[in-house]
Image (cartoon, rainbow, N blue to C red; front, side):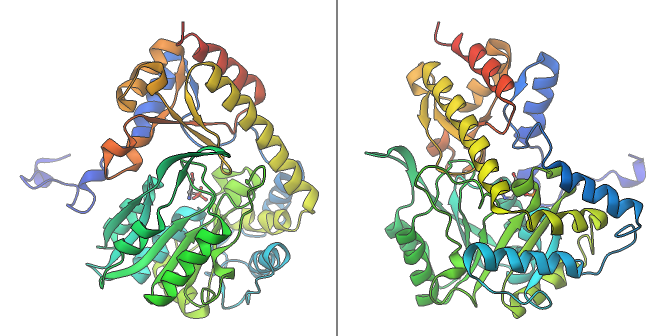
Length: 400
Ligand SMILES: Cc1ncc(COP(=O)(O)O)c(C=O)c1O
C-alpha cells in the first residue's frame, strides 16, 4: 500500500466492516498448523460421479463453454434445471424466462438480494444463518431481522425448531422479504409441511417476497421430506428458489448454482448477476446439465452414503460426550458442548485442534444474538468414513 492511498478512514466500508475476517479462514489455518482433521468447512473430500467429471472434460476438449456462455446460462442447463424441478416436485418453469444459472448458490443469493432490496428494507432470516446472508443483506443496504431457531426436544429427539408466532411478530411494514433455508445449515432442521404452509400463508397475507435456499434439497434423512416452498399456494409468483450443483453433485469447486422463479423475479436477479460475474463455469454447465438428468438411483445412493456418515459421526459425537442434534437434512451436525462442561463455543473451537486434533465451527458466528448460539458447535460429515472414524477416535479423548 502506498502513501497515496493511506487515509484515516477505514478502507473497508461501513456495510462490510463487521464481515472483515471469517472464522473459516482462522479455523482452516489452525487445522493446517496443527495437522487437524478439518470438519469445519462443508465440502466433500471425494468428488462426485465419474461420468459427470468426464462430461466436463468432454466439454472442455470439444470447446463447449470455453468462451463466455450465454448470460442466463446455456440452454441445455436451463432446460435440465426446469426438467429437474418438474420431475422431482411437479413444478414447471420455462427454461427461457424462469431459470437463471449463477456462480454457485452464493451468487444466486447475492443477485437476488441486490436486485430485490431497497436500502432500509427489512429481511427476515432464521438465525443461525448461512454467513453470506448477512453480508449480502448488508451489501444491498437492507436490515436483517433474525428469527431464532430454538433447541427443542420431543419424541423425535433434539432439534432446532422455528417458532411461527415469533416469525409472524417479526414482520413489520418495512419487511420486504423472507429469506428461508431448508434443509437448514447449520442446524440440519428440515421445515415440515405445516411450517412451510404457515410461512406461505404469512408471505401471501403480508405480500412478501421469498428467497428460499434449498441447496441441500437432496440431503434429507429418515422421515424428513424436502418440499419446495414454491409449491405452496400463492408462492409460485413470489418465490425465488435457489439450488446448487456443488451440494447436489459434490463438485463445490465448479460453482454452478441456479435460480428458478417467475419471469419478473428472474429478470431482476439477472440484472444484478450480469454485473457480478456476468457468466461463469462454461464447460461445467454442460456437465451439470448431464448430472441433473442422472437417474433416481444416483440421488438415492448419494443420500444413503451421507446418511451412513451422519450416523457414524452422530454416534461418535454422542459417545465423546457431546449433546447431538441429529440432523434431518444437510451434511452438518450441530452439537451442544455443555455436557462436556464447556459453555463457550468460540473458546472450545479455538482449543479443539490442540486438545483433540479436530477442527469444528462455533455456531455463534451464525447468530446476531451470539449468546443464543454460544454453546453450540458444528461438525461437517461430508468426509470419508475413515476420516470420520479417526475424528471420532480423537474426540473421545476429550471425555477422558
Ligand atoms: C445454506 C447454503 N447456501 C449456499 C451455499 C453456497 O453454495 P455454493 O457453493 O453453490 O455457492 C452453502 C454452502 O455451504 C450453504 O450451506
